[in-house]
Image (cartoon, rainbow, N blue to C red):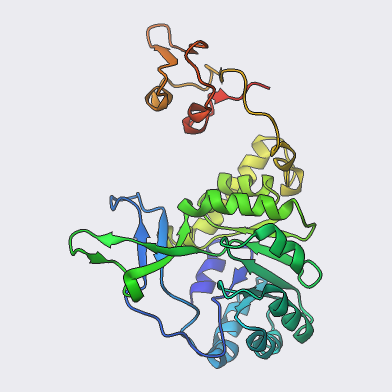
Length: 336
């Protein structure tokens, strides 16, 4: 009932777990949170799940109909070879899904897989791309066959050790797994921007969307939509509604009518010169919390709590920009 829970939690559409011609043989344990281990610090997940362990026939006869009962658009995810997607595609199309996302799962052969699936079905198809390839060139090569690009897949192999037991958390070969969540976001952001710069096909961003502001950032990098998974694993299905509300609140606060008003807004600045002037300080926003002072290795930030001021020593400031990104109150900014 996970997909129904996502629908009830405020998701705008559903993407089912990847299926293939045979069920996956999944190791146990196969998931581990990534973080310091302290409560509330887990912001990512390692998984060794592979594709679905549920047989394709069960997905078609039971799981897809249940998901479709939510009344939301349902996208099937399938893999992996040209022969396999040619066989699976028509079956999931007949089951009533609205689109198909195909995952190459690092097997390569993107064009051949896309061509095979395109010939097999009439509904829209989306290619999910690995961060371990040249995403821009792969996206461009797929443009004639797909209706959109999904970026990115999980990254790995990665490893986490249980220090109390002295062994990996995961039961896979070598204890390795694939990384998702907040740690993946900067990589996913770069991939989305690279893809959006070379194709006019819609880009669906995946990887580290934990908040509405994360989604806004992806939209500015050129994404048309976002997918959320890890945040729901860690927080529960109500995360979908929370992120949707945060997107709306951000757009309203910035005088924007829709996501389209900001989509790709950052792309034109990708080749802008580096910051030449020290950061500007907005004292109406600044709380004198001191985070920027701690992060500045040049001792260029001066706080006067008696006068309730924060200033930048222009002689010491190296224009590195770190303080701007660490300020939670947006009190420091790049001069226009």
